[in-house]
Image (cartoon, rainbow, N blue to C red):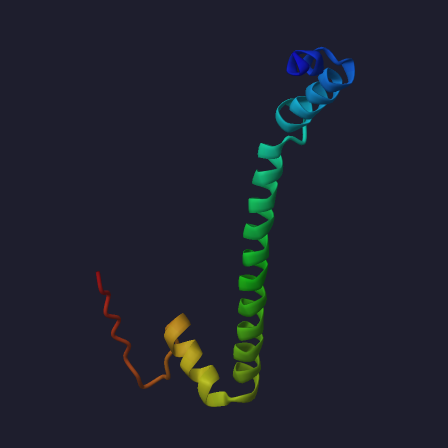
Length: 94
């Protein structure tokens, strides 16, 4: 009997309705919040990846600017540059 009286209570019904509305039907429901949290974590991982790539590329760029040997190696491997008296053989692997 007490349970039925509780269900008839207008405050209980109102609070229950608000909770159900907020959890399932609102624009910012639980499922949307969960997806946003996952997206935020994914973006944090991408940020860490790109920061590490920037750090390594800065080191590589500094090495190219200061070391003539590494600059020559980079130009030969990447752009297939050569000296006048040299021939280049390119091996393509599958």
